Length: 280
Picture 1 (spheres, rainbow, N blue to C red):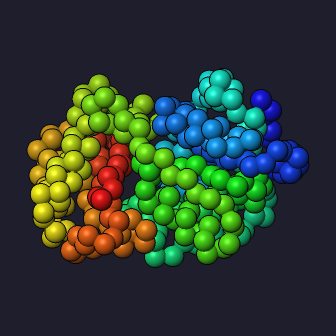
Picture 2: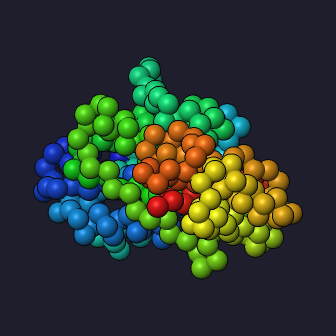
């Protein structure tokens, strides 16, 4: 496994790599969710590349960039075990050198939910992913469904800018009690960790209402709110939204001919958890 720190070296390595090349972009602090992506990439491609970069431009001024979990040595060991060929681990000033001032501004797909709650977040995501695609020129790139709106933003950018990358979305990996795996789960206190599965239970309750024939989005959402509002350690529900899974536009009526997603963001103390399920 080759570990690369500069854009120029990574570009050269990817130009020389056997094709197809699959890319797994990460921010490190790897867990089984990330590893499900690397395993699929390993199975699909001759060359498998990963990136580890805690991207400062997708964090807001009062968010958790400084304390975001970092475990580079362990991450590299895991990636080597999974058969990774190339790992890109650039420092921030390699990705954003002095004078950097070119950004990808996502459109309507990024306006609601996470885009509304975290202004500038998807600009940072889209810009860094565009850079990673340009540097590595992958045939395929792998992302997790847990970040459903992020996947939609990346798909739209990839399509609109003719980047030509096949975007592969992998199912959310969960703990036995339903909590979606996330690097930020490490922030949870034992009491919060015990309460956190309520997030997925709420989504499942909404899905169940939908499966039993409810087509009014507000009532589907209310089923999720009912679960979350009963959990005393849930301090705030930023949103519960039923959206078109492609455009991320909210819907009022759950239509059978659209792939829909119900998504939520919930705060337990200072910890913010996001999750979603696809209806269909």
